Image 1: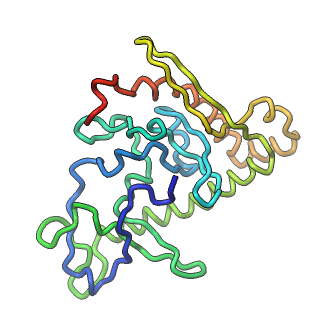
Image 2: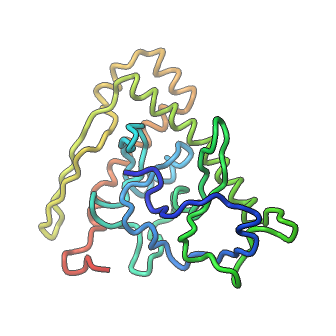
Image 3: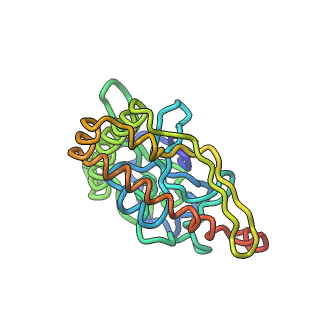
Length: 243
């Protein structure tokens, strides 16, 4: 999986270059139709776990990431309906932040960027990005607040994932199921917490994880795996798969 998934043409926002740019809200989320695993941060575990499975995957640069599984590898995002609307109570922040994103442009320096190919950009309709005089508009301020919190949560998430690796509690798992209509599915290459390894963790480590809230995150992840069958049930029958 790539770090930016559905972002195609990421450019830094510039108050001169983009002073006349406006943005209309997306009419649908079809930009994410091919995303089947969405990176999430620890603050989302509870909401995501209630509606779908959480697993761990490695990014292109081998970083361990918790992800919301929203489709089968090589398939479609099963949490989008035929109109491109999200078909579950909670939309992960990775999608909600689009088309905005931070990019590292130096040591400890982040720059606000956008996917210039986002179809909502134009010069006649929607909210302005910059006010007269070049000051950021309300939309940019809101995006900065959201991305700042996402960045803060992402740092905590990376620390959490690192501790799981150091404790050696992850294992590669394969999930298989047969639906009522006879279809067979298999998910491979998922990294999940091995409960047998978890039970062997030193008491001091478990106490620390409990105090930090990380033990709760682990059990949210484990409970979420019960939603794997629900994910498979969202897979349309072969005749209905074309959108």
